[in-house]
Length: 461
Image (cartoon, rainbow, N blue to C red; front, side, top):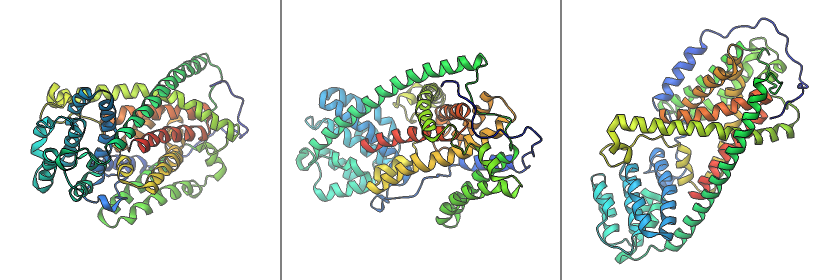
């Protein structure tokens, strides 16, 4: 994050700016309330074979599978340790599918010990009806191919953990163990690289902040650039139309969600011209320019992502503290440990996990394109482009970045507990916008962040 020369783009004149329309904040507030009530931006089912498993339940199964892979890998190296690890997953059994998944996992890692299944005893109240009877049979006697297929229709991958007739090993047992070991190796590698990147990013960030505090010209963002007021209008239109499309999809027809997404991008980008603002002035103020060149900005986004990691680590730590505090308030230490009647408080699982867990290659590729292509392009345009520009016309950087990032986090489906971690990532993207001015760099950092997560999910799911 070294000092840069001035952008080749002309600086806008410093003058009067038309304020934002009165309806902006009511639209934003209503949209936030609607999202808080549970509108799921990614709730459509991509795999008809798993229709009995809704997106929310399938996402939980996806997270459980990632953890199950680690347990199985540990079991390959240390079987008693794996059996103990299953106990930590009991708290995640929120419904009958998750309960069955954990039960089958325990049977898989203790296949040589056909004694009582301790997990089954803990979650027996959730396993009722024909499905519950089938799970109990799988644990006590094993299943034939037809019964395994019935389990697969509800559980997906976890059906492969059920023992065969007479408690024989599942047909794909060795393949499952090899895949689990491979996933553990990938997870350890990614975690190690992440820690190294975090350290490097923290050093770069400290150097940057030190130069900034000395008054050196390290940031290319000019908060005086106009227009400002219309930027809030663009963001309000983007958010309001998108949420209206989601509500319309729930109440009228699912196609309205796709229509809403399209209009939420097109209308806000055309709106400034309707307000008498030239496209070039709007584009430059928004950050839609190449800065010092495409390659430089792409490289800056890669370097900036290291700083995002360092800032994100603080947010993740705060999310963990919030999780612990809410768990203690809601059910005491037993709820936090998963040993009480109430499940521990955790961030909601993103629906895209369910897409990948239940989807084929095409579905997973679409998830990668969505998360690493469309999401960085449009979210950076309207959050770090429009909303950050509006706040920076009124406040200093830290308050502007905080407000932009809290709204950014609140609109994601991870819920209240996930806000600190997501907001910290958003602050990192705002810092890159401030450093480069061009949105190319924060878009690249955003794409890297999502791409790494999707890649790990792809390997593990």
